[in-house]
Length: 333
Image 1: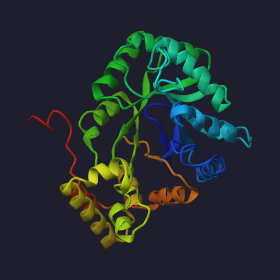
Image 2: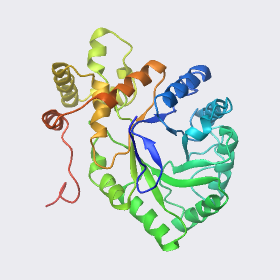
Image 3: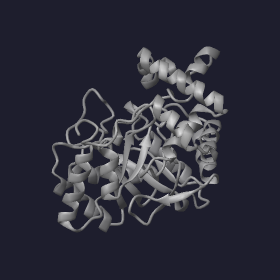
């Protein structure tokens, strides 16, 4: 495993990040534990989760599964850089969400940290991430809550997810004015070959402020994982629902995906592994989040670390899935 700094911090993390969203809803506890053991054995040390994972009446279940894995001992907790998130309403009955149980008020941040610590069975969270921007809470209030938690030793760093470039700037300028916190050190964004809008402003802002970028959905919901080949072979492709299914309704995009699969077949490369390897070539990317449902899927993702993409192949991939370029040149001169 190759390691890199998480943004401007001194924290070293692997070039692949273990996403745990499937733990509970799609992967039972025993298999989830096997996946985490295999990830740690492979050198993956940044584990990403969120307080709401498990969903619906099972919100928090994913954190509980990670907590039960930590409880097995063997230095599991010490070896993991643990990242979780706050924002979603944690009222178990989604039809009657209770006020002040969501978003980024100081009250909800304090409540949510304590609840996550209990579920995770740990005394601190390494990277505490804001799952979405909160347009109603001022940054001074958010950073006040973070300052207290850092002083208490309950969190070490703060990160963001699904932020626009100007949100990253506003957050870190507010932190700079306070002078008591590092501000945001990482950003999780939707970024992959088929969805490159983050290149316009999010990635440049992250580089400017020293945030590590951790892309989620690196295969775009399975679209970049050989979906058309699986469809032809009658396999259990993920093209039946979600992001891939929506994308394949567009004939132009479907044609690009076919060109992508044809190109990689010519080079003897696996689509999913190539999509991950492409992200590892992008400036400012710390490592993509992989969300395996099985140990076998994790093994496939790890093979991406051995894939080398030369300049010619990168150019061909750009021709199939062109990026928008950086702003303002992306839409002006």
